[in-house]
Image 1 (cartoon, protein in one colour):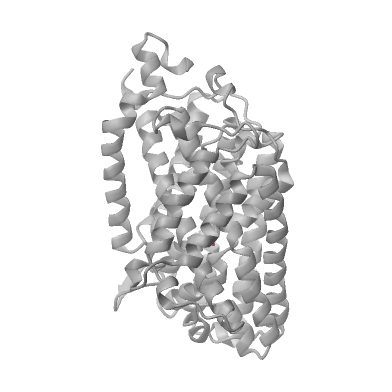
Image 2 (cartoon, rainbow, N blue to C red; image 1 turned 120 degrees about the vertical axis):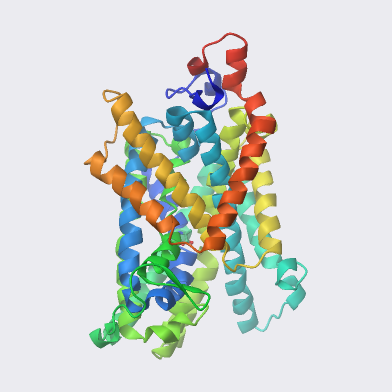
Length: 478
Ligand code: ALA
């Protein structure tokens, strides 16, 4: 069979069975993992930049990004429960569209997950440095900025990355439980924000509603418009896909993944709309749009400094859950790609004691710490969006192809109206992709060109499916 068309078996193979991750998670862990991955830098900080791009109509940007993600989450839930194996979009694409497409999506996910973790670690370092300064502890500038920003290393960002990796290497269950406690704190602080800001609501602050128009466009070096904001705000919504990377570790994949993905998505969309309304209705948007900690700024300017400190403190304590969830997803993507032979085998070893893929977790942490320690936050969050949009398109395409190819296959969860939901997810993601800044799309294309080179130089020749074929086995049986 042609290499690009080699497809991984949908049912778990006997060969993989001996190297499966331990099923230790149930749906509350997965909802917490999802919310832990979704609520972070996006709502805590990018809401400000979103408002600068779209004005009060950023609330429409939230609705658009949320609707696209809701459609994609339904496709994810169907694919994750039909193929309950680690690897998320990479595994589905490999099984449905073939090895080459699977590799491209896996390579894209490596970029996405690394950049998300690094961006959030750098964002966290900014909050942590400010928090320490408030306590009278001043870190030297060379240790709080990476080489690319004029310092030596962003030490807080490196330290938080290593701490999260240690938690993951200690075993999935323990880290998921810690995650659940931190998620409760993060959501609690956001509810306090709404309770404090809502009494100051004034509908007049929503006029003019759409000062920068609807389509994304460049205005003096800044992307403006409702769609320009939606392409950025999209960052705030994803993370539910990290739940699907835990599919092998779910005790009851059909129930746990469905509740985990759709539940976490629904909770966050509702929360964001309420927070955006409270922020926009209580404070003129140009004021908080200029702040690096917009939610704390809103509370401070409304005369509630203690509540402002609470939300800032919660960000410092709880934002690491986002790094946790994405680093978890990243290590699982590496693990599965190595198990398939597309990356070096050493990355698929599982610890006999904890059941966690320790070597790959350490490798992931090193990669994330390197990027976080050297590069500034800048626009790297947008790069993560580009990778995520590509993965969402792939999953929606896989869902539609499978509906045609194997309509009677068992689907523990079936997306409603798939021929509406699927195309909406695909066109929505493509529209958002083209609403990103040009440089972001160029980085994405360059990364994938590198990926194609890696495929032809290494992965294609080491593919387990390819080797089985060469030995005369049937490709799909591996
Ligand atoms: N959704 C995640 C965040 O907002 C990536 O931080």
